[in-house]
Length: 81
Image (cartoon, rainbow, N blue to C red; front, top):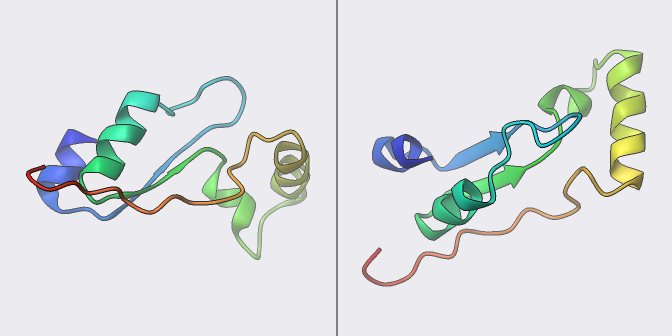
């Protein structure tokens, strides 16, 4: 996430399927504090219109069990960061 902030990347999606995946609470907080919109969970393929059946089922199950974020928090940039 530090490198993303240094490069000016404004959107980051941290993959999560089974287990924690690439999601890190510390990285999520850091990114949001540095102006990055962070989606912290799920798999981008689950949201593709042409997703295969497995990804569509995973999206349904993970959404119902709370493993896919229902909202995407805006960055929380503070003065001096």
